[in-house]
Image 1 (tube, rainbow, N blue to C red):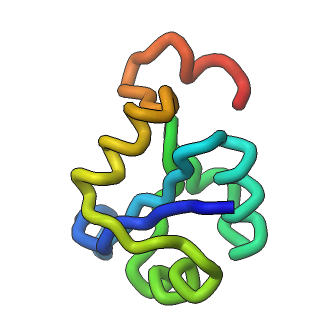
Image 2 (tube, rainbow, N blue to C red; image 1 turned 30 degrees about the horizontal axis):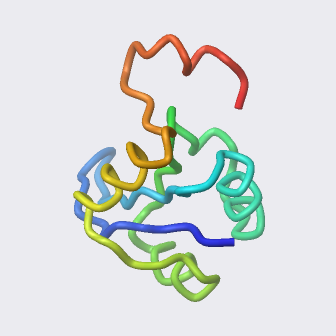
Length: 93
């Protein structure tokens, strides 16, 4: 199982966030997030939003640290990228 996380450089709701993604499947991503105790509501279209204080936990659990640009590249390469308004996001993952 390989999942990836970018640095917590994304501001929102008074804190900084990372994106946790898989380059294989949403099932792999959901399973990894579950092992971290990340609630499913943190899943947004094609990634989990991870608050900065949980970043070390994700890395310790095996998430590979990559750049934000690499996150997008991996999602596109795997065919897992879902943009806002994308019809595919309405289907269950």
